[in-house]
Image (cartoon, rainbow, N blue to C red):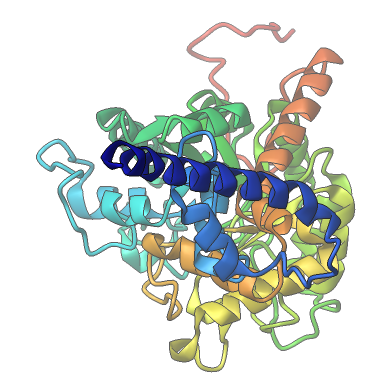
Length: 471
Ligand SMILES: [Zn+2]
């Protein structure tokens, strides 16, 4: 008996186990056919999360790459930022290094510093930044920002476009400091001068670092200097900052009392500016239309041979600020194939009450650009560290996932969100590169145009030979 009872005791658990496996297999086979017309809610997230958290599904074979609730916008945002690099169009952090640290970075360990700026490595990593166009910004001589640094001419007056100032020197120094910062932290940053590098850097867990300069005055109004800036890694140039230059009219120069489309004061792109755009297209340097006047936007879109960018500009219809882009230009951006990267600057997000600007105001602008130009033509260009006026909810570089979660909560699809954060700017950059290759293959030479009012100094024929002797 003792043996029998022992034997029967060992059989029943085995039978139970076999029956359970059989029932489980049967249910897997018949559930898809739903023969009893049971109501199966395939969108029942609680059920799925119980199923997926069971031991069998937690094995490496069954673990899905991303498990999140469709309505869990924060998780969706983070999943998107893991797969697609978030490439911000504009950040002025290098200006802080030049103006506050005098370009001296080696006495600091930036991996250990919580800085007062909108950007530091802790914030950027928390914000899942995938790539950044670092702005190399030197304020305009005599412009509205000139009080930031001393750019007056030696005589103490505002310099004209022919007079010496330090814009080109300081631009070169700021390129140097940006490259040195990137090189000093190779496990965090990677310098990128072509778009394919951005995805490679992102996959390697690094922040792709690109350089853009913020105003044609930083070339000294010279196409030769522009080419050397390109050789040094600069991949976009804003045609103007807050001052007119030899190339184009800035937003600051237009008569704001007149309607946007009837401003006689807005002279737009100059003839030399058309040569500049031509040369930038030949080089493959992105043409940036933030800060320019509305007519400069229109003129440039008329002559550009490659897609343009707005590295940090919003939508004028949403907020009537002249730094924002009017709807007729948004329509042209769509046909040009370019991208408008919306900023996190309170003045452009809430003109009347900038102190009340929130991340929702930025989302409004993103959706407006998407509705007029299409989701293929909108991006993010925070302008962090370029002002103190940041919206609530998007105070620094750590908050990108929150911004994206709010965009998703308003109804954007994952595909639209991926275009917004990085795919659009990378597509535009690829197109600009492709155009440049085509132009160069066609034999177009470097552009030798110069500004008509350029002063060349006295005729030196008395002290050096003439190339073409005069008779
Ligand atoms: Zn700016």
